[in-house]
Image (cartoon, rainbow, N blue to C red; front, side, top):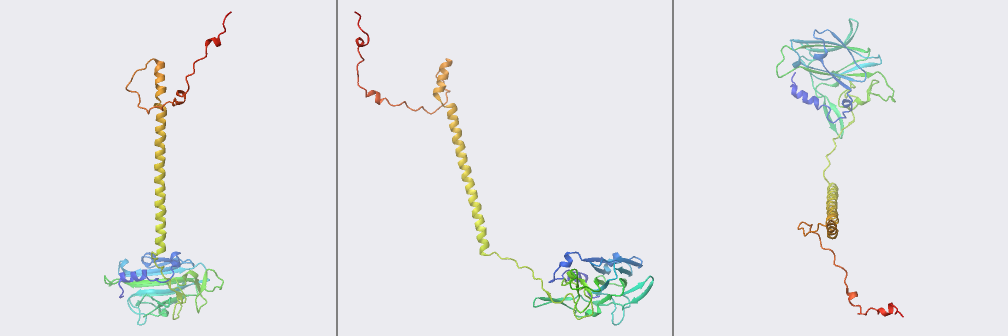
Length: 345
């Protein structure tokens, strides 16, 4: 009971560091707070456990009021082809599994109707979180103080499993709380190598879901030196941040140049169009209002010609053609009328 809750919470959040989080992403793990799941009076609570999910049961004495916490869970699977594998991920209770569990205890077993037919040993004391280790890019777990064999339980005989908890919450200090985390994994009692959903745990005939292998949580909980599903796991390296290379700068400059060129072409096109519109407007005004000759003829026909100072100011008409060719003609006298009119006799 020497683990601080904030410290324990931080370690639990970073527990799967370096492993593939595929199982978490697919919501295979279902989290259950024991203070919410268990009955308030300690009577039996039956829970239907789906064989494709892993149940994570957690307990923290800071969420419990009263002097004690008693719970009796009965988990059952849909088929006798499956069993339960329990891994004590962490525990901070009074007592010791070696010297005896007086105040606090966790126990597993099975019953038939109201008769208990099997009971496991009682678990209590301190169980530390597994410590991830990496060597040559391969991830695995170390158990510094509590070996794997002293933190597991398996139910293979029946498709039902009972869990009893008896925890004293009366004399708990404010800055230290009693905690417990159980990972309950349904396993298939046998599977073929061609099974697309299940994979066999090493050194065993039992099988768990394939996505549970190398996911950062122990699911093949059998009494071996190492957990069968979390060995020889390649370390999932975080992708390195890409630096800004010269090629990236060249691409950026090229894009900026194209944008500047497009803006320049657009400005030139707008200016050219504006000048063209202005010129067309000027020509139209001259054609409509600046033909002085037409205006004067109109005034003559109406008999209202006057030197009005309000005539529009128009550009002068072009000069008449030169008369040089006419001036150069020789003065030839007209023909005599005698030649044209015959004399009378």
